[in-house]
Amino acid sequence: MAGEFTQIDANATGVLYALTGVEPPGPQVWTGLYRMGAGLPAGYSVVNAWTQTWLAPAKGVNGGIYIVARASPTAGFLGRLQTLVTKLNSNAKGFAYRYILWIDNPDPADGILSAQALAFSQQGSDSSSGTVSILAELKLRNIVLVIAPDTRVTSADGAALRFVQFAGKSITLSQRLFGSSQIGTVTSDAAFALADPAAPGGGFSFDMTLTTGGVRDDLATLRTGIVYSTGEAANYRKEFSTALAKETTGKTFTVSVRLNPIHPTFSSPALPSSPTTAPRPRSR
Image (cartoon, rainbow, N blue to C red; front, side, top):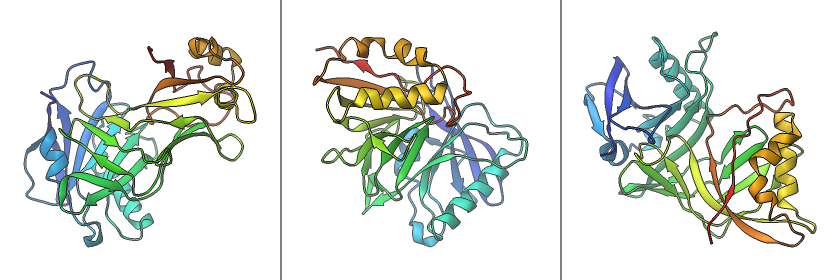
């Protein structure tokens, strides 16, 4: 069982739910659901949170919004969240989309929440799928996961969402140190673990190919972004040592990537020494 969303706070304009009942290796972050409105249920199963909370964005009322936070929220979080959602709706020219929000600090000193956001809306009348509504650029230090508008997102159970790759262009990974340099080619759909009991919550997983040597050296581009953003060259070799063994000119190989947008997104060299992506060669 993938757990359920249980009400923990409410006011006149919305309800906040927390994900409960998922044991590790499932979500090890705080995961929640926000619904706008009054008279809402006391809880949702994970499936119903996905299939029964769609609303038309043009009507100005958001459907179910998923929240992934580094820590459990404190008193006043609901109000701070509602202010953030109002800002997102304004930035989207009044369209009230559903969102996935990654919030690094749910209790900022100035009381103003910031988040990385992915907007999506229903695809026709199908309650099990939608499409990405706004270009999503999810930054992880100097690496950015880009998910294009109109990318299809589906879920069979509400516990894991699948963003569908199309022609190698719907989902891309780039290094954003100087402009934007694409890294490799994402060859699979991107699975987002929300309430999946088998995977830590809040992160994406996907397969991609990397090429070394020649005009486009993906490992060199990846190394540059990681080394610059962490400030220590040793980090790349430590985290990517298995990939380095395959660093042969002209060689193309496949890796599996796991990354979570909730991690810090700074671009200064003076950073903690832990990169946020860890590709590992797949078993062949």
